[in-house]
Length: 138
Image (cartoon, rainbow, N blue to C red):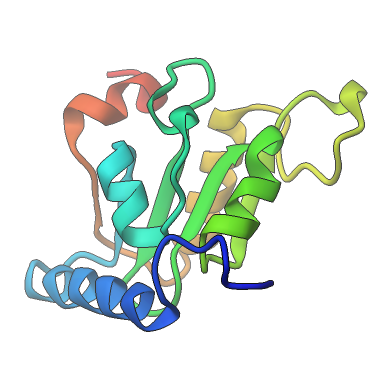
């Protein structure tokens, strides 16, 4: 993908995630779940008004090793491809709209599946409790 629409350079993308992963190692975290627009932008370069929507939530999973994964409605997949260096894009949405491949029909099922996939190697996950309650039903 061309870099003309990217939010920042690939080197800066790597630097941001290396800093996150170093802090994760210091705190013994294997994965972060990010949900605020500024954290999503910092870790992926993705920027859109959708990142603050309660109806179209966006999440980023940052593993201790490797690139982050972004989870969002399929409507924004093309925007992520253009503005972000993240290649791991997982989408959910309405099947009948035929907008492309969906990894999940709803957000909670998709996140549960991704946590299951990550949990083979991840033992400690971190997120801000005030932003996680809508997913995990506190």
